[in-house]
Amino acid sequence: MVDPTLLYRRYHGYVSSLICLTGIVGNVVSCIVWIRKKSQKPTFFILSFLAIADALCLLMFQIYVVCFFMMMSPNDEETYTKAGMYIVMISFHLFIAFHMLSTWFTITMMIFRYIKIVKPTLASKVCTITRAKISIAVVTVMVLLASAANYPFYEVQKINQGNATNATIYFLMPTAFTKSHPEYPTLLLWIYGVVVKIIPIMTIVILCGLIICHIQNAKRRVQDISQSLTSAETYNQTSLMLTVIAFIYVLTELPIGIMSFISGFHGDDGHLFYFLLFSGVGDLLDLCTLVNSTVNVFVYICMSGEFRRIFLKMIKCN
Image (tube, rainbow, N blue to C red; front, side):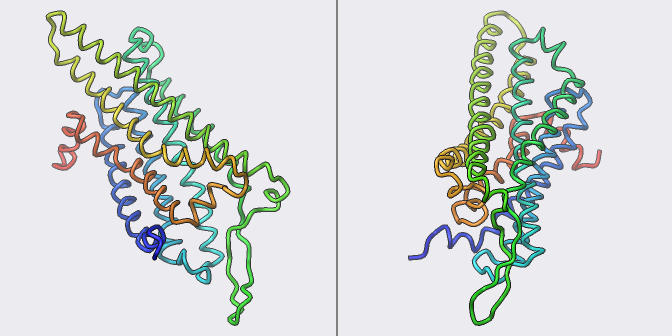
């Protein structure tokens, strides 16, 4: 019986390419819409950078897919070339880096929104465009530095095939540094599983819960007094939209977070990078990340009237 994951691997390049291209276009549109808002707010400013990070994440994965699944064959090692394996290694490292950036932009956005709706007086001083720019810069620098910890793990090495053809192939192998420091792979897994996945998921769940509770309490207070509900409903709708985006992140990233967390107990034998690159299950987990980076534009269209209005103006070239 054929392994379903290996059977799917034959079509993974085409499925993921379709998702990547859709997501890149959607995130470019999202970035343009949020930038074009006349009353620019910190939350929407962060959303524009979230769209940029997601677009770059999808672009790097598209490069990896074209090289590894189309120009070469993941099931045929004889197709692995030196240039191809360098492209695979670099693009996948950058894919992870930009996805980490997207993750912490999401958390930054939720923190700004939480302060805005729970502490409106404090928000007028803290949640400004200037503070949003500083937050974006700090998060970007910290994430890029943190992602650099993955770079010394693998290198492209030449392997001579001991068969009749005596073919020479190139493969990603652990570096001398990795081999001489057996604790390094385990440390990477714990960093990736806990710092990059589990902590962000827990943070987002807590912030979403607090925001939803506050919205429900605010609705009851507004309904108790004779006020117009229009502005309050619009305000809450935006908060709910951002909460939906955060929950989608949690649902799509939880499987990878659990897997990487468990892999930390297996040391270098369970290194996540190798697992994601060269296993059929890794292909399915990659799809979760791609969906997470693609779906935001559809949430905006469904839940934000202002986004739809600006988007329609763009379509009509108005």
